[in-house]
Amino acid sequence: MSDDVIRIFDTTLRDGEQSPGCSMNIDEKLDVAAALVELGVDIIEAGFPIASPGDFAAVKAVAEKFGDRTTICGLARCRQEDIDRAWEALQHAQKKRIHVFLATSAIHMQYKLKMAEEQIISRTAEMVARARDYCEDIEFSPEDASRTELDFLCQVVETAINAGATTVNIPDTVGYATPSHYYNVIRTLKSQVPNIDRAVISTHCHNDLGLAVANSLAAVEAGARQVECTINGIGERAGNAALEEIVMAIRTRSDYYKVSTRINTPRLVPTSRLVTNVTGMKIQRNKAVVGQNAFAHEAGIHQHGMLQERTTYEIMRPEDVGFVGTNLVLGKHSGRHAFHDRLTSLGYTLDDAAFQKVFEDFIALADKKKEIYDADIVALVDQRSHQVHETWSMVTMHTSAGTGTIPTATIELRHESGETRRDAATGDGPIDAVFVALERVVGLPVKLIEFDVSSVSGGKDALGQVNVTVKVDDRTYHGQGVSTDVIEAAAIAYLQALNKAIAER
Ligand code: KIV
Ligand code: ZN
Image 1 (spheres, rainbow, N blue to C red):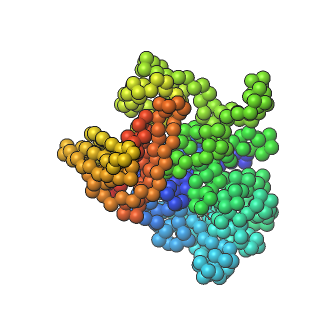
Image 2 (cartoon, helix red, strand yellow):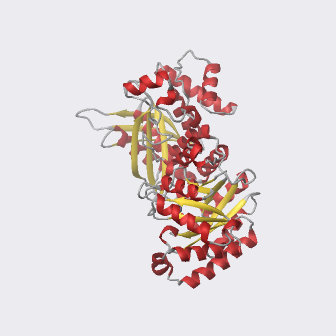
Image 3 (cartoon, rainbow, N blue to C red):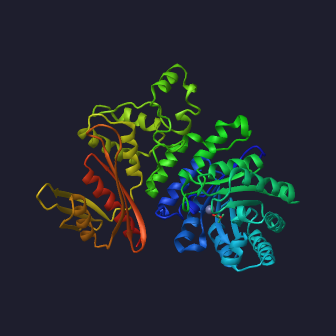
């Protein structure tokens, strides 16, 4: 690849998924991987195969499905069994990479690994060589590199390259670096490591001080040619560098960085939305690039400037990141054709069956709501496209609540076998009563971890969107529901989360 193209290494499915509350099941991982392929990332780190059978299966499935289009990577510690397991998961992909890591900072070596410098060097040489026997594309990461003594870091990196590493990644594991510090680390490696020209230097920054994106860009200036990042910046603790911010900074300031990426930027917003829906991890409205307010101009003086010439206050065009400019209102009388056109301009290509279902949802919604906005349509499509296997589906739901009465819910569900079951429950409020009734019918011990309700668009008849996170058997599951009735939206979301738990059980 030419030296002025930055490789985008996406680790949403590995470092992102590792963060609390962001776990995804295998189908969700495949959905995200498909979106990352469409987005045009160069490498997908699909997981840590030795971590669990689920992780192994996900890496294998992603490798088999997408390994002919994008390089699929699996993580391994510097241990024989990790590397062998990573290879087992990746072997059928056409394009594959094994990523091995070993901590190199004094603090990690002393307290975590209990290894001396010489042992780190020999383990690096041995394990990188083992991985290289399997695969030509090998990445090595000296974990906690930004807190590693620089001379030793140079020695480890040189060893890894000699043993066959083709990419050397320099993680700021604990988000400790600052831009000039990190720039200096990369410059030092470039000037002091004799074989550095045989490998691509990569950045991997965590956001504990809010500097992950700035540090990654400083590394690019210093000569790094791969950036590791995640969609929406999800990841351990405060997260990883946000892919959308890195890509748009490089693109918007190509005059300065003089490099580019191969990212299909209009896919940024849809991919961000997908990751939000799948993980239940919402982004703030003013989030750079993909937040709901990222292109909203409120101040009169700004609006005036924008009307004269949009570049007065806009450095990126919303359509370049996947926001659709117009917000055409559809209603009951907009036919299939108009609805189809709207979906296309919102970036969706649905097959006939999926289109038919979403169209039916649209017609049902148009009966309840006079004006349907883009945000409503996006919510309908998202809800349909993330539907899980429905072991149980809703037949009827009835609630009663009010001042001076005990909130009650009656639920009837149908099992996929055809059997129907009904139960009733009381609760703190109607939503609580619905949740208790659902748990009774389904027969699972469930703990509600998070409940969030928001309005999808404006107006009194706006669609309400409910996101729930539940814990079943120590695993977390997300569910999402939309409806003009927030109690119904909550029931849909809760049932979706329970169905996911049943499917995994
Ligand atoms: O943050 C980190 O150090 C990592 C490594 C495994 C690359 O995620
Ligand atoms: Zn990390």
